[in-house]
Length: 313
Ligand code: SF4
Ligand SMILES: [Zn+2]
Ligand SMILES: [Zn+2]
Image (cartoon, rainbow, N blue to C red; front, side):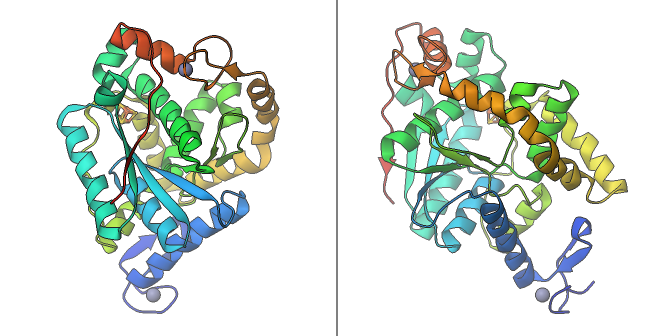
């Protein structure tokens, strides 16, 4: 197997692209895919400050690495979820990465700074763990970005993640979620811009990127992921991709090109109608936002505004 670009021995075969690459050309391929996603979807302007949501996993660390190498002013935010050893270890990978590349990592510790961890929070609020976790992440990443003066929040959602989410949203024809599913959500009053620059790269590519760039990341899956239906959708889509390479990317990108706009207007109207949360000031339909209600239930006390920690390396 030879590299498509330079004819040296290849280290990875990408059937979706009908191509194989050597280590250097694979590195270039990943950078080009990110550059293309940023350009095609107007994700980041030069000079904008980017906050990368860092979990210690392969996707977020690869994303931070690529954005840094592309010259963006990208700092990280790690959220300690209080999920036992998994959180301790993932935090170590995030800190080690920041130290190695001399990058700034901000941190919020849910148990220490907010008063609850994900297992307790989900029990108290009677939400599935991933639902309580997703709500906390969205809220705290956005709050950190607005408090610390970042223009953009970048997350490591890759092509496989996005195709699986789209599959779930389409199975239910969930118009609200379909309207929000796009690689960029523009900034609005109280919201930083949200971008997904890895949308053109698959899970296998991100793992290979970390291995070839010697980026250490947490290999264990979060223990709370058991039973998560997106894992099941990923398996189904992987089987489809095996027999029909490129099917996953076609499903996702044709949705962006041909269908997303039909669902998008409702999201803009919904955002325009939001008010400030009476506790934390974040945008919400009315009264206390969903995160402040979760916090109050999980801690059995009044919700308090969270201050975002900073950890220069
Ligand atoms: S698997 Fe669920 S609980 Fe674990 S980090 Fe992901 S969203 Fe959070
Ligand atoms: Zn090559
Ligand atoms: Zn609030």
